[in-house]
Image: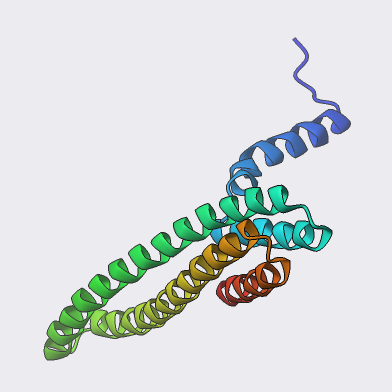
Length: 162
């Protein structure tokens, strides 16, 4: 039985394995990215006057923006809860002057920073949903310019979260 693998075959197998292992990361991009993609595509269709395509992409952008908004709200809530527990840990460790108190303090700072980031992203995604709904309303009424304005604002807010 020959167990020697040809170098070309080894490279091909490694590349295939790499694609298989990394494919879930590419198959499920974050909802904010998908919302951005659909909003930008809706902008392009709006410029071309393709109302039905705008409607379709607005619907998808709204779906993903709503999911992103929810994820950031949930993450913000969980981070806030973690901060509460970390503050208790820091308080108890400071009394004992332990090294774990130092680690807890650093973790607390990181968590507070993450909490602010999630709060900001949640606020931006809420604005995205609002502007996409307005764009949808204007698109249904045939107001191409107003649709474009709201799509531009939605894209701006999505970009702020990325």
